Length: 163
Image (cartoon, rainbow, N blue to C red; front, side, top):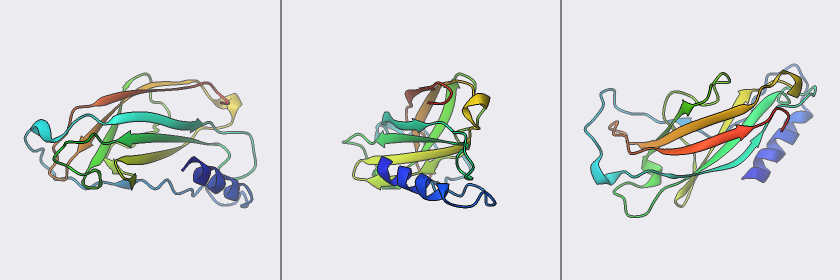
């Protein structure tokens, strides 16, 4: 997956600067019911999280050069009442300052491979001279179509400018 993202970014490096960065992240909004449902009980568990990669923006002339790219892997535990393909995931910053707005407010789905799903986030990061450090704690929880939310898992996302 990381190789695919790298190849996609390289392909964009040869595109003229006239167009905005149009890199596809593979994440899509997850539709949920308007009213929250009752607690999910034992049917939902906390996911297992891993930061796969984080690439900061660079100085360059291509439209995606100043973009940051974060890939997070979510593994769904065995023995639950739900399949990964039937769930969305909510990403919420609970520690640190989210001035870059990396994570959308609505639940998302990502590319599913067995019990794992990868979520790719793209944001306007700027060149290294304009970047600040990233130091966030992100809470991730499963969301069902009827708006039930499972227990959260947390992941620390940290990166220095230019990394």
